[in-house]
Image (cartoon, rainbow, N blue to C red; front, side):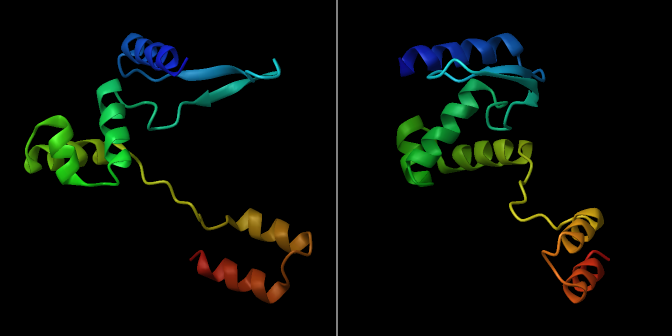
Amino acid sequence: MVIIKAQEWQELTRLTQGRSVAVERVRLADGGAAIEGSWELPQLARLAAEDQIFVTAFVRSHGSIKEMERIFGVSYPTIKSRLNRIGSSLEFVDTNPRPSRVEILQRLRRGEIDADAAIEELEGLK
């Protein structure tokens, strides 16, 4: 089943040829419920199939460039060059973004923070 799914994913990647893809319907496999909307694919899913394989191998090798050299049969500079190319195509995802002015005021209104904390956060936005 995993091999079939991988083949389907590779086929989708081949068909889209790097163009933007919007997902509009998601069905939960075990329950049959569906969700409709419009979402972009995660940035790793937007990589070419061979780059997805490369990233997977890198993660599975715990980031060992020596192991990557062995797996792919290429030199250190080749691995570094490919990592740099893939890395430059990915956006950094901020896991702790600063709240907006509106979000701070909404938290103040809901009583989640007091006025002093709200002022401090608002001043930090400058």
